[in-house]
Length: 76
Picture 1 (cartoon, one colour):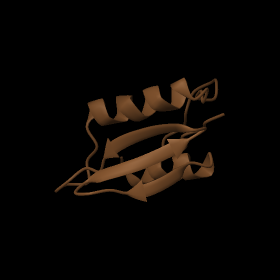
Picture 2 (cartoon, one colour):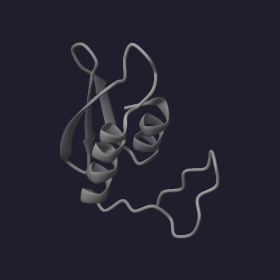
Picture 3 (tube, one colour):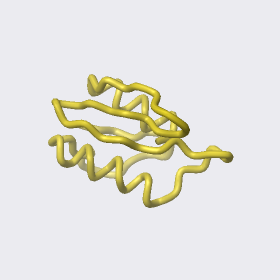
């Protein structure tokens, strides 16, 4: 989970706790999840992005409709 993903989760009211190693524990709408913080480089791979997106979708969070502008990730 990168910083941008973390900020989105925090804005949605998720409880976030640092775990052992690179693990990040998240609780949103009563649903727990564990993600990994990228290391040693800050680049998040496609699989990690997909995991966070799938978790948000399972909690009923959907991207806003329309084209996203670079640097503007809108969520409903």
